Length: 453
Ligand SMILES: Cc1cc2nc3c(=O)[nH]c(=O)nc-3n(C[C@H](O)[C@H](O)[C@H](O)COP(=O)(O)O)c2cc1C
Image 1: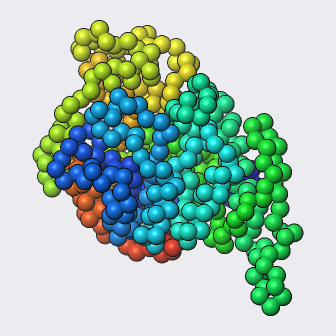
Image 2 (image 1 turned 90 degrees about the vertical axis):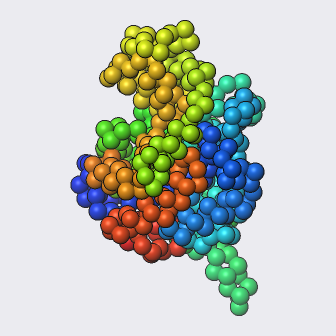
Image 3 (image 1 turned 90 degrees about the horizontal axis):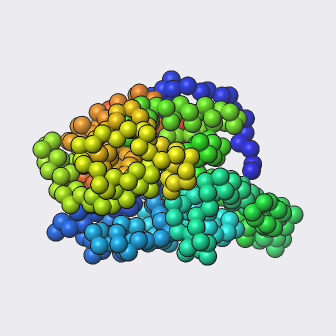
């Protein structure tokens, strides 16, 4: 993997960071249709797989001058989950974001793509194509996937060690391929009839434990640099991987303490890998249920979650903690000795560890545990309130050293998205915490502190 240039290391918490403009992405997963959000008359759920639906969201996010759109992805669907909502049905991120590149001109376009399946050469080409077509606005959210093995000829998901070892090699190959055909190898000398300097377009000759890739890529790099890298997954291995390669981490941080711990740890690890601590931005998902009044916001949250699916939550507890809660009364307190061996394989170590720590700390009742977002596969920070409440919560987190920004997950209805873009973001800008105008045109320029204002 190409080592980042050594930089003066600065570790630590909020010091030197609090005045850096907040970095804001918006999830394109149409989170406001989740739960019962899609059932609202104005949800536009019929348009969910159209360009019009996404182009509208993208243009609104760009008008608010957000750093980037963020398209999560899954490589499987469980038909049972479709009974109550669109769940993981989704357009291919690369195709979707390439279409959105044509409808926007400034906002970054971050595509989730797994390293557990597929070939690095293909993905390197797709991402660099998106980078070209968008004028340097592509980003790659690197995931090791939670499921989907049977769609790729494998009986089961490889374990965490194997997935992250493969992720490191995969990412290394992609980055070297991006460098293999440098833009300065193209003199484009019309007079002499010389298009490229072939000596500068070099194979990478990679022969590793998993991949054999000769290269070079058949697409030149861009003068603005390679697509920035994002990552999600916060186990020991996930954190180490992020600290080596990621410019941004999509984090599940349900509370400030978890956020501070994760951010300090990632910054320390980044320094350990020869990077500047500020090179890695911790961006928790922020689930937002917004209203003009607190009551309106609470009603929206309650209506969206009215049909709480107990059976799904019980299955989540079984998967994450090895706890069989089907026959337990709701008031039963859950103690650590009721949980299975923490080292057993789970789909997401991040979510399992968050829940286990909660049980150790609070011995919650089963009712409380079933209501936790981690059980349903989410563990995001949540604000249910007015735009002012959201601004206060965001500033508090950033100033506490728990985040460098956020990835917004508006919930319940388009209203949450509208209030976030039209009120929360402008208030942050008025307070000097977010840009008023884009200073550059590429995603890297949006992310780099020196370029952001
Ligand atoms: C906040 C968060 C978001 C994630 N988003 C995705 C996603 O969109 N697609 C996907 O396939 N995996 C996603 N993952 C799964 C991770 O890439 C990873 O496979 C999983 O968390 C296991 O790694 P861990 O043990 O480090 O948590 C996500 C994980 C987290 C914590």
